[in-house]
Image 1 (cartoon, each protein chain N blue to C red):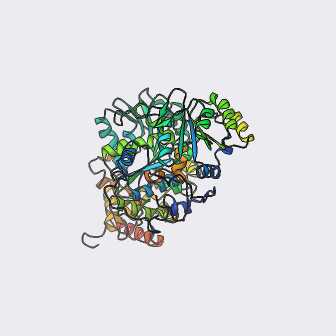
Image 2: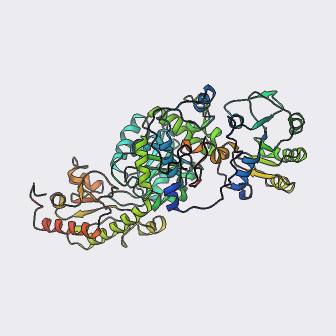
Image 3: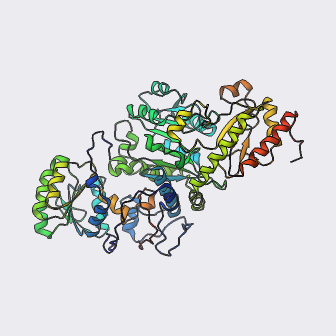
Length: 169
Length: 449
């Protein structure tokens, strides 16, 4: 979002084939820090994920229900209630990331997605060493719209080049 | 919706850096999913049937990418937009009904009454009119600076300044903008640099790669290349920090969109979303699907055409430099041009195909030359596949005295050329025979053409 002068090298966590694999293999997504305010970016993303058929599980201790889904106080509580979580999508400040990574490993999530600005290389390394796929400083909604959805309908640059006939949308 | 989460579409696209020529043919389009059509279909429709009320609401709320009404988006226009964004290396693009409309919308999106703009004093006359009169009506003031004087850009900044505006290559002066330096000065003041790259196209220079933040084009010119269609486009890089405190009009909750904060919510795409969902929606200068289709046909051969335009223009410029009745050939690609170092840095493939020179004999000489030409088309446009010529002192700048012309960098005998794709020997032949008539003291008699 913001071009910081000191942004670390995140290319290892922005691999486009990793991104596509996560999009294709994920079914259940816990959104940590999902806001109930419908003008916040996280709310846009949560709505979009539901609309596109993912099981979207809000994790926000301050709310009981967001976007018609029960909200859980922690990843552990979410896993206990709904079963396995494939992907943990993070909308929290970077300093919350180490705790979220520890919990994600504990519940056996296979991938961690850190939204724009949610950057902590140490936490990313911990998650990778535990066998998780990590995507960092990318938007889950944008990447889904790029590879599966309709981002190209609004003139955005998907950077995709292909002569393969598209699937019916 | 159940089948759009990617399951079952397990083809992973490899990461590969495609070349410019590949992208000018393919970017923005996949063969049509419903029909398999290889060409880009023309979606000549005003509006789109919604799946259900929830989908309609999601599209209008910008929660989902969807088509609502062709004043705001259209699938054919979207292919053109994405192709331009891809070729420029931007985050996205929004197309407009003309270059002037694109430029105005790009500025309108980031300006408020009381704001200030720093602009090159060598802009295209149509842009000068827009800045002088339309911006004044918006209560926006402009400071004009010599684009070559980098200190002048810096000195013109005020607390109310919102943007720097320049052209990659100007006419008639042939000034080449030092994009990287001017962008650095803009960024030192938390300002974006907006650049009109109509004369250069993304094939010759990509201003975003040198630090510019917004690129505007009149697609009417080289992008189409056929002189059939009016259009314009705005490309944004997606890296400018619109939340830096200087742009509440982009960053704060928008009263025109139920309190949406475009930059916070859409990040990289915030400015572009606002440009489309508010400015295009409310000003209404949308590109038509048919024009987008014609521009896409043009883009498919952009690199090939620009290479030939550049080569032909340089041959014509060299011919003129050697001709006794031509002087002051303002082609920045010539070896003795003061802009030569900037051309080598920013325009290694060539400085375009539009330039001016002075014909001997002043006003009359210029008019005689135009009268005598038989292959160059006498008209007010540039960037056509056909070669074009105009004499500013008797057309676009007709009301001005010789001294007023000189202040604008235009001589009484100045002639502007837009060099096309004809056999270059024929273009030179035509100039040669026209000069012979000028030398004889008159052009061809009226009615002889």
